[in-house]
Length: 181
Image (cartoon, rainbow, N blue to C red; front, side, top):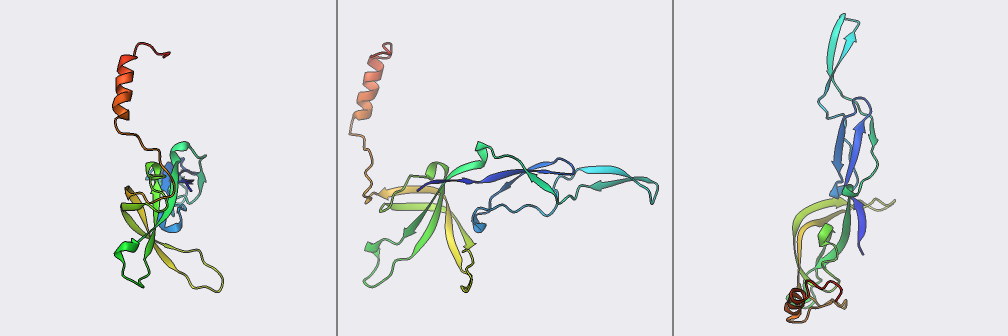
């Protein structure tokens, strides 16, 4: 099932008003990690009474406000598990699997039971801690490309019949002027 995840978040510095964008970290379950201080590099000049002259300082504020979400900050998200093909394994061998995160136009491209080829970046993430259980590290792939090789899925796809595209183009060319037909 696909979900919507917030991929980016905009923040503003309370002191200098500098706006910046943070990307959600895949290894933390797509949570945001704010910088420890303002990254604006903007210098402010204030009067220093000790030395009786102006003093120039960089903004090192640690206070940030989150700006309202916009659509460009959100992304379609789907996580699937990919495992070794059963045909390639010997008898008694347990297939290995890995989680694959799909974003944007990759969402919905693959269905359960499909044979797929996936390209992407391998990340690590900590599974959420439970009382009395030790911490576990999990590997997953953030996919940049996913391609269905064969469909063994029980989910049926609408397939175009051979020549249907040519018939459509022919019909459209013949009836281009008659928009009501």
